Image (tube, rainbow, N blue to C red; front, side, top):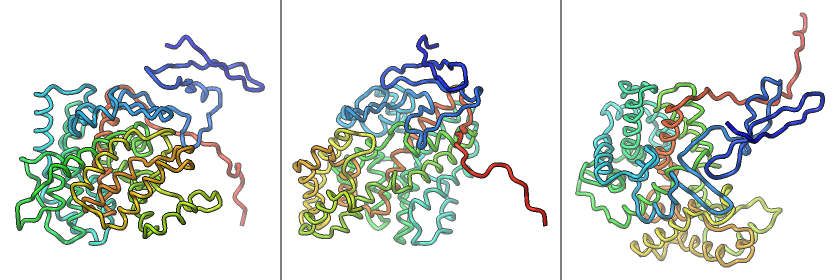
Length: 425
């Protein structure tokens, strides 16, 4: 219990004492749960000042540009760890031993195949369906195929569902791409790493052996890791809210995918490529930068600055290095969109307008460039984000079900009509 109290004074009412709690780091929180018994609600559109849960998974300090997973800085994880090791960390709370990691990797690998009848589900979609539309349906449908382990009160069932989702997401993502281009689905291979397997299923064909460049595989692993979790964002909160009703894990993750699909959330790196295409040529950059600086012009430079990070996005530092490695490997110098991107990056890092406002290139800017260079179509960008974020969603879902929780029930400030009689005829 907290010894500190906040006192709320409301005209016509006795003072109301509210406990103040402190986490291990970050802002203190005022417990307002007793206000409902006093006939009061708090008003916080977007929940930007409301802690909806207690969590031990991820911590962000946007002012200082800090992102910690279970206490480990993202920069250190990106340099020393791998995506699957980070998955283990997010789910179980500690870094694995070498033996534990090997067992975890093997468990995920053995769950990469999907039920063969899922192929029939894909055939029901139009060929030009957006891959995220397919992913919403395909992931939700997993509950019809793997209903043997959906007892959310059983920790072993929750763990099995987590492994299945992490293992099958790359397969479903690649299938959604292959379907859209009319190529045969590629089965996963157990001899490949997680990121190698994804690239194999995306770009491989039955005609020849897949050749996976280690630099590109490493870049994909970094993209997965840097998008693995980001605290209580819109999609994670959606998964927790859906999970609070007792919904099965596959339905909950499908709800997260739906929330992520929104252009204000997961579509940011896709928006970067759309912006580059709108600029069209390096010769147009100065005109568009001037438009971005004009407060009366609605044009915005996408991929610069971040709602949470008021300083440099710590993930962008890692992504920038990876971006340079990929572009050097592929030797791409004549792609007009990448030329525009590199020039915009230079302006953002040197122009006082951007520096003063801390509008640095963010992780979406660099990841968009990398995915474009690798040959992944823009429509797949958010799908890859969903693949990577699945572990964060499932870690939060598992954490919520590991202790007491209540079904989510936000309140409202009602401003509609009061009670009135239906007119007599």
